[in-house]
Image 1 (cartoon, rainbow, N blue to C red):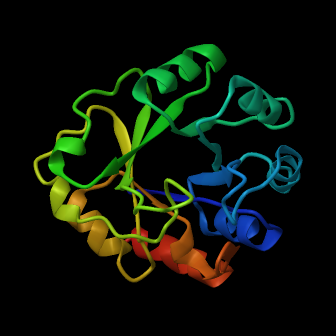
Image 2: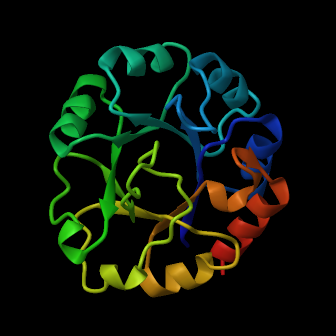
Length: 206
């Protein structure tokens, strides 16, 4: 069964919907320019709504050690999703002892990693367009055919433009073991829709 990650959760309604619908991963965004960003304190309050359940994933963009420490001081994270170089990702993995997924932007088959590079998983998504203020979460779809023949070196998740309407086709086309969605389950920019979250997870389960 394909796992589902609902990313950028920042309010109780969305958080409860993701937990209730059976998401395997909940993404908490710690990148301030994002409309989905939360502070460490806000994330801790959200996470405390449900003990156990989905794994908590912290999203960071070029973080300092101090920024990661500030989150881990108030909230247990099961995974770190990092927008950093491969070398920095491995360094953070060794420094904090928390499993790491590294985000990789793809526009051609040559962009797909052949090696894990010391991390536990990869998030495969389209490269951000020129002028974008965020490296991900831009509602841009990936050309799934780019993944044909790719041998993933570790666990991986597919992201980029996924919605309840296309996620089943994306899984069939790529064989992704995990799918990651943020803007595709929002009713407004940065505002999750509980009904769309439930619909996305149901479609992925097909």
